Image (cartoon, rainbow over all chains, first blue to last red; front, side, top):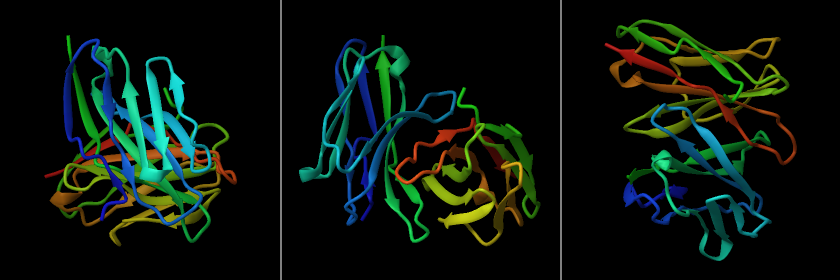
Length: 117
Length: 114
């Protein structure tokens, strides 16, 4: 089973629509971290948010918001009033402690978001 | 601009060859991570170095090796290259703390093996 599942391979919306990208994770650790990264067409990976397993507060940053629910092992990402510049591949990642003490991320396969004008 | 630099940006080589990818972390970051992104495997963690020492290993092939130098830059060596090694190789760096693992990624090196 995958540790991080992004079931939506591709989402296509029209500008100004709201869109939610799903992320479901699997871990036995009580301490872990969840991330979202954006990979625009230029190819670079851009950090969007980090959330630790003890902090279930939802977060809003401008048009972006994140809904972390431990009960369903989900960390969903919503973009409000989408814009063409939001077109990118979005990766959800889970960081769990390794035997060496370091936290190593496992990435989902990504969701490609296409925002049409 | 994340502050992480990677060279070269593109690399085209032939099967059986050996290449070296270079990464300079952000100023002050002690940890360097290497990732491979391919269509087949997605984004996969390869290896991590912290202050010159190997810290964690992921899905890194025996034909691949890495090291981190005293000035904290890192090199990923790929040898006996195969067509399937064609991928985007990312380096990331972080300030390794007890509970801090935000990673900043470089622009990547696109390797094409012909």
